[in-house]
Image: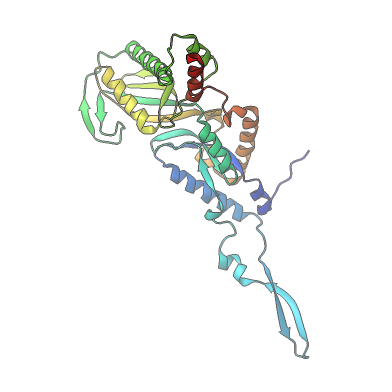
Length: 318
């Protein structure tokens, strides 16, 4: 079936409901991303064929003493008086993740009726994957490169093997922490059955949890690690780089944070800033809808959580 070009703004507006995968640049806040998206959507919608001005009935007295009834344009509804048909306040926007200003990469955005879907995605807490780059030998006040340097240390004794062993220790400690919070012995059969169910998710949404961390690149003094985590924040990732520097008998700060995956949203499908327009956003929504239909677990997880751990522990105690 041949595609039909739609130039009617109200028709396009009816399709502007859903979630779209965007690429957030570093150095830009989430609020600035929101303002840019809304501005571009309003601009493109107003460039289409918008609805005509309303009509009003006018009764005039003709020269031959007959009343003439006719319709004229209601000037109060003219775009030159009331402004463009689509205003920024008409568009609703909600993010599935609250990335910080220094974080770049994948971010899912719900638009209009898609804000409800974005809320469900956020509450579901899917796993996010980051590439975090650190700089060895310098420590800063906020653990990021933009702040003042507070300490310096030597790094000649640090090698990739040493960093790899430390990251493996961090991952193991977080895995033990998952079971410690549940009160289940990590060496027990109950812990094994619980781990077979899938990702163990903490009930407390403020509790960061790392499921995997490994070294992907080491170019002294820079090193890049891949982190699989939930409930993390930009500040927490910066503190993690700082702690890695301390455990290596040195110091470090974070130079970049990039989210490469959010659930099933991947970096390759995200829209760059130059593509944040009406046509690409609607196309991105269609792709996202197919992705959600293929992976319903994005909206409702069947994996284990600490609530299920407590139920399992109760059964064991009985």
